[in-house]
Amino acid sequence: MNAAEELAKQWETLHLTKEESLCFHVQQEATRGHGNLCIVGKELVEKSVNSKAFRVTLSQVWRLEGWVKFKELGDQCFLLEFQKMVDKEKVLSGRPWFFDRSLLALQEVDETILINVLQFAYESFWIQLHNPPLATMTKLFGEAFASSIGPVIRVEVSANGHAWGRCLRVRVVVDLHKPLM
Image (cartoon, rainbow, N blue to C red):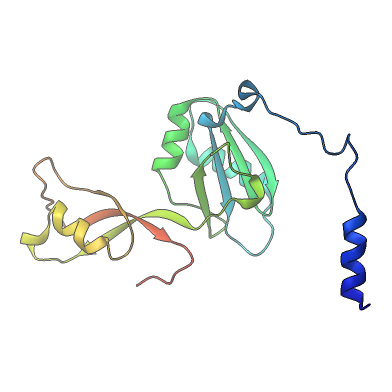
């Protein structure tokens, strides 16, 4: 009998005890958290981040109405809990954020996802389309052009769908694992 067959035979003899085979069922009420006031962030940097400087600097830059609590999750990942929803929305809408010249990727909390499987693959950025012909300074053109980069969130235009200025601004979701075009 070879080693693989011997190992398979030993595995067949293993069994869970009655106590070990009991299931644990989570009640629906126990899973309700406060994730609606939280964001998960990851500093996309190779070196470790000074967590105290990170907390102090971002708290000052954001100028929030209420408090924000930072909880380290490991691997440059943080849970940010806000006192007020308006502060959470301000931080999300002000993206992208950088600390120590590195991108801080943010995402809404999904309480059903395990912390160790969170992926920070996308981040939204404002892009500027400079010097297009005046006739193309429209919402339709901005959406069509910027969709080649990623999903378009918003084109900064007036109520009639036109923009006048030096550039056409478009907010786009960028895949962080792909090179920019």
